[in-house]
Image (tube, rainbow, N blue to C red; front, side, top):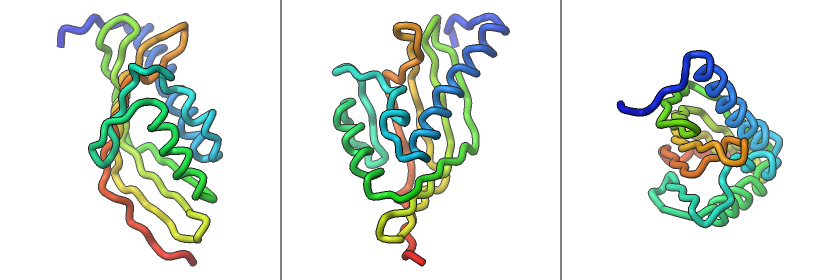
Length: 147
């Protein structure tokens, strides 16, 4: 790839910053705290997201849909299986994330997403890494009855 790559020490620092940013998403989802969970996304009309069902949506729709889903949960757990970071240029990177998600719903049912994947395009904006584009892939969750 012809992307301008950062120096080795800068790359390590940026990789840690991006992993810390995604860790905030994980912590926010697990705390059912939507402000913490979705603060990494660029609140702009230019933000785009492709959902697990192939739909294209904007920032407001993406956040609303997640707030709606998380409001039905009593707990939510995300586990990173693997990740990879590629640099596209100064202040621009792709973060690929493979994860498992498990939600316990207020009904007692559980939704389990095995081997879900997400791709973030991060840009350094105003000194912070923001996801300016986001795509998720997963099979529909396995829903199990409450215990």
